[in-house]
Image (cartoon, rainbow over all chains, first blue to last red; front, side):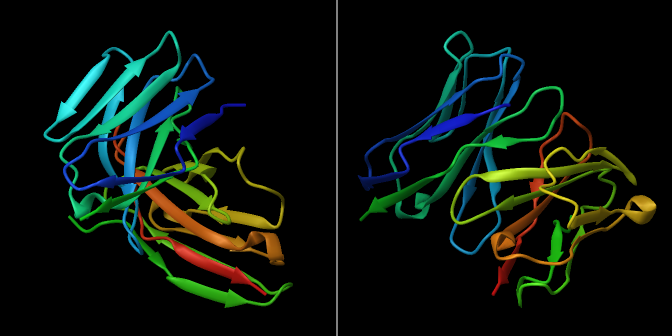
Length: 111
Length: 113
């Protein structure tokens, strides 16, 4: 079945530095790749997504890149701030529309 | 608009008991999904409703889990009888269409002792 590998599982960066989280997937039919942020005790919230017809998408300090040939996609956060600290989940879906998630990355931004 | 709501927020039960979780999706969202996260692992798909119909229940772990969405509005997920390995956080999500963003609820943390 579908599988999503996410790395690293934990990531600590200094405030102002960049953070990169990477995911690989196995289903060549996947065409939608969202990223969710879950702050402690809160619900997962979509922060950015990308569809298979584009290779990169940016929204202020957050960007996502997609390499369909290599079946991997990455989340880039620039100028990190303490409020960026959270668990980040990558996910993918195809025609079935159910989301298959990675195992999550605990990002800690140190002041 | 009001977000996805789930009830209860926490439930602690003993092995063998029954628990029913409820999800109220965003009004007008035909698609409703159940997911769960067990022991800090990945969030895993359980099933998908389109209105009142089960579109895909391939993620349901066994027949101790029963989901319903009568009338195509709120949904319930019943676990009977509960086992220790059922502990985890159960999330509900809804979307307007199949190609739209899935909005998540706050989850129900289930602990089976």
